[in-house]
Amino acid sequence: MKPEDLKKRILSRQLTPDLEGQEAIVCGWVSHTRDLGGIRFIVIRDKYGEIQVTLPKGKVNEELFNLADKLGMEWVVAVKGVVKNEKRAPQGAEIIPEEIEILNRAISQLPLDPTGRISADLDTRLNARIMDLRRPQTQAIFKINHHLLRFIREYLIKEDFIEINTPKIIATATEGGTELFPLAYFEKEAFLAQSPQLYKEQLSSVFERVFEIAPIWRAEMHNTTRHLNELIMVDIEMAYGNMYDVMEVLENMIKYAFEGTSRECQKELKILNQKIEVPKTPFPRYTYDEVLKMLENKMEISWGEDIGTEACKILGELLNGFYFIIEWPSTSKPFYIKIKEDDPRVSESFDLNFDWLEICSGGTRVHDKEKLISRLSEQGLNPSSFKFHLQTFDYGMPPHAGFGLGLARLLMIITGMSNIRECVLFPRDRTRLTP
Image 1 (tube, rainbow, N blue to C red):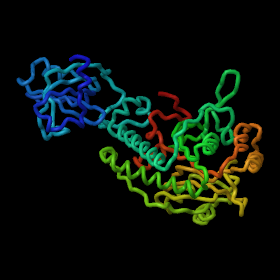
Image 2: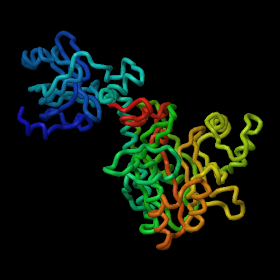
Image 3: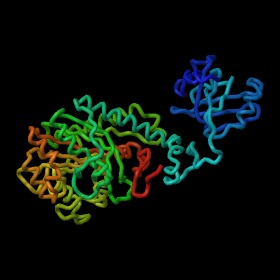
Image 4: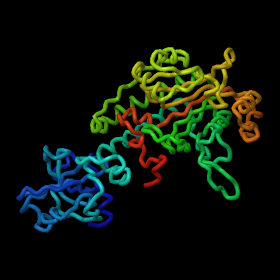
């Protein structure tokens, strides 16, 4: 087979009964072979599914017939042959081969079963992630992720947001604290960005509505099923708006993405035995005080404290689906969150939860420079460290608001995964830096 022939290949989803009698070239990985004596089968897999290659004895040459017995699992092959209708084949059609070319071989002792028929623990799968990604169940997660990203972008662009790309090597902590990964940047100290927060605020004074879908890094010591140290965030910032405006953007974006993903990913959802329930909007909204009231007979939380994991799990039993927790104590939120004018104990902020899982936080931002300096000082941060951010407020900063949404946590909800590592191609946590 000539190299240029591979450009003429058809994919599994294109192999249909109406091609009967036509010559076709297919390529993929050997999933398995079967020998029924007078007939042998090679099932190969490409990105969309499986293709059945059938070798009836006497109808294909003896060399090809014997080759079927020698092929190993995950060998890469190209097959040229004639399409024949066969309702029992994966696509309702099969290939009767005229030529089979081995493009590459795999080792005989694979680290795990790519068909998914033999289970393996998560660590084993992550250690051989490329093999794991060939499993239909794992592939389904990231095909869904592809469409989820597509519809998030589609919605935000439709709503007049501009996509931006902000620096990921920074000189100053975005939100203060110690959750930063330092790095040597020539003769200076720098950090991996823990958020695009300051840049997206500044850019909202230029483009008014901006969004970014990009990695961030947090040196948190958590080692749970919902925390990672590198993650993809969906961030937006919106000029001339407040927390309620961006909450509306957020809930409508999720509804739009769920509708589109449900429509486009029925095959993948079936593989995962999942069904997307498109949420109704608006999402329910509860104040921090109301949530504490719900929890008061179940556990004790002092006013001003965070609502921790155990409390969220109780909430998940009381409140199903998506819901907002709004008006958090001002001491619990970053310096850039605006304080309510009629009650300085409370901030114009929100978290979005699904059952017990927090997936997003946001709020109205401080757009007055002097108030922002005061907020920095109140939280023990040195305003001089934020000189380049503060100076942009001298150029006319409009009122603005925004949010940051954890993509992998949203994907967990859609796919039904209980561990966030399942929803990241190559997860990074406290113990895992490879592959």
